Image (cartoon, rainbow, N blue to C red; front, side, top):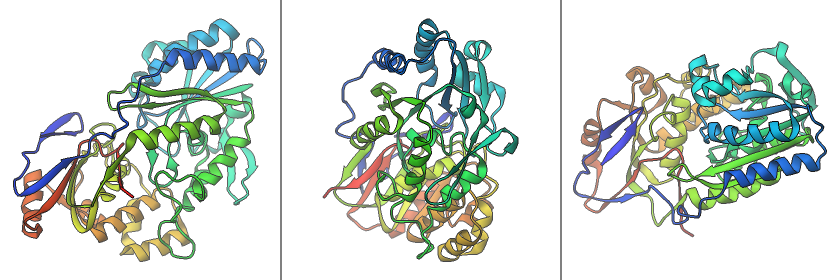
Length: 418
C-alpha cells in the first residue's frame, strides 16, 4: 500500500492482525462526467440575458492553489467565449482569503503563464486595508469589507470547486467572496462564530455537510446577496479529476446543487468506527501546511472510535500555515482554549481548538516535516515513520481490531450508516 506524502509516495505494508478496509471512494463516485463547454455556453447566455453591455468591466474571482478545481482549464474555455461575445475588460482576482500571498511562480502555474501575461491577474490581500471597500453589516453584526475591485466591476463571475468544509459546511459558493476576497477583520469575526458562546466548544451547527443552522454559512450567504450583479460557475471533480458537476447561474442556487453532488460523491458510509485509521491528506496541496492538513485529520476522526488511534501523513512543507494558530495551544486543554478564543479570537484559532479536541479523544500520530516539539504542543504525537507509529499502536489493539485506510482523507468524509 502506498500513501501520498507531499510530492512523493510512502509505502505502508499492511500489518496483520487487523481487518483492513479501504475508504477511498463512495458508491456514487462513478457518476457520469459532464460538459465544461455546456456550462460555459450557459453562463454566456445568462450574461446576455442580463443585458451585459459590451466592453463592461468583468471581475473573475478564482480560488488559490490550496483549492484546485482545474481553474486553468475553466479559464481557457471561458475567456475566449467572453471575449467573443462581450469584448469585456477582464480582471482576474485570486481569492486568497486570509492565506499568505504566494510567489509569482505559483500563480503562473495555477492560472497559466500565457493567461497571466494576457490578463490583469492579482492576488487578494486581506490585510491591505487601503484596497478594501466597506459594504455594511450582516444581521449578525459582521462588518463586510471586500476587495476594491468588487465595487469597481460592472459584473462579477466567481469560479470554484465545491467540497466538504469542516466548519462552513461546504467550500466554494459564497466562500469565494468571504473569506475569499474579504478583509481580515471581516473573516476574523465571521470565523469566530465557530465557537459556541455558551459552551466555548465548536458550535454544533458548524460542521461538514451542514448549511442550515450554520452561523458561519449564514453570514456568507448574506454577503453573497449584497452583490446582485454576480453569477457563478461551480464544479465538483471526481477522484480522477473529471467534472461530475459543472453548472453556471446565481451563486447560492448553484452552490446548493453542487453541495448535493458533493454529499453523494464524497460521503463514504461506514457501519462502525474503527480502532485505527491510517490517513493521508492526499499529498500536495492537501498537506501543504498544518491548517490544510487538519481537514484530513477532521475526516479521519469521524471514522475512529473514542480512544482509538489515527496515523496522519501530512508533509506540511510550509509549516503551520498561520502565525495565529499555535499561540492558542498555550492555553492548555480544549476547554481553556475555547474560553480564550471567545475572549480574543484570531483566525485559525478554531483550527487549534479542533485539533486539541481530537487529540484529547484519540491518539493522533503525525508523520510530517514539522518540528517534533511543535507537534507535541498540539497534543498530537510526532513520529519519524509509519513503522514507529505502528509500534506504539499495536499493544492497545484487540484480536478483532478494525482498521480503515484513507488515501485521500482531505476529500472523503466517512459517515455512519443510519
